[in-house]
Image 1 (tube, helix red, strand yellow):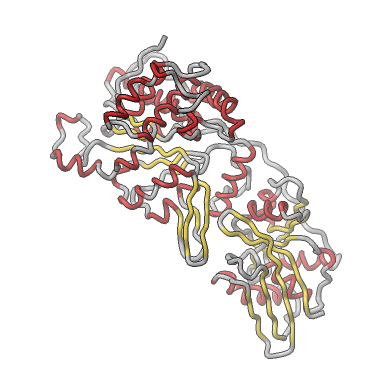
Image 2: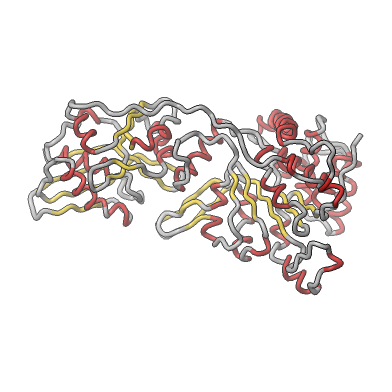
Length: 512
């Protein structure tokens, strides 16, 4: 037999595609030709596969070998095709029977000594195989636990090409996936560490309950970064669908923890302000890779010292904040990544950022305007909550009274508010108030009474509030009502939402 075919899986963005690896051996000068739009890493498989086969004790066929990857129009990237290429090549040379792996998807990178090494993106690949009707997959031992996250599949793993060859010949067994590990204890920063800043704490709670974006302006040491870092601690765990999305993105980026566990906690990304456009949004040569924005999908993206980011980098956030996805165009095609995140921006009021307050600032009015102009109007218009924080007072920092509320207490209120929103919007396909389109909130039965929105309509007519800002205040009002356990917002909820939107940073008074 001079022809053989083995199933594998390719990945474009977050979408997996079933790929047929064909091998044809014919007379002619010995050579190995790869076709089917392989990238540089895949083209190098010719040398890896040859060394792995020889070092595994198998005979290399000295014939003209053509390996084709179908569909030929789909770009192929990475080293995950190595194992399938080796199997197809040996089967085409008559060294292996194909029956034991007929209809089985085979994944893995080969080392020169024949070891099978883990690859990126196994979770979305295996999910695509299951969607295509494949019931059995063979993956590297280091990816086995990750592959078992997809239900309805029989997963077996290998640690070497020699083991897989022995299995196909009926001389050995493949490895079973490792047993599940217990869930780790939840650790991390807690809201109880925050001194003072009652208004900031409440704004953070509203942001968590409704999935709203947030910006904080204040002097150094006011607690902006501490508040932002504790936002994930009050967010509920991810459901199954969201956890699979997040875990798949981490797998594609190669940052999935070694235990291959399903990620249940909302991710947190805090790139340095020197991060490039590609690092934040995604990019790279060939097929674009996900950036920090997509790696924070269903979680939090903190832009600390936001005015220090490059202007083009900040402005690139505008479209993803509206659509919840990033579309990266390249010569070889478009790649789309999800980016449903909560963005938190923190900024000092001026370049000198004197902690003693504005009265000691050495910056000119022009320097202050130039510094904050990086946070452009169109970008800030997409940020629901915009607050200003005051410096922490000594009495708040040194008090010996009972500690502030811990994250667990706040998280319980956030979960209850999200449950109310989900019950209201789930029939329409939305889960959070921040996801509801503005026109829906301005139509019956969700339109509020005119007396409750009178001030908003006045600001809109005067031009001091945009139509987008009008809708975002309505969303905030629904979140405030959910936190207080009401079925719909009242006038005081709209006023409080406007306060959160317009940045009045006085302490929140007790509400009746």
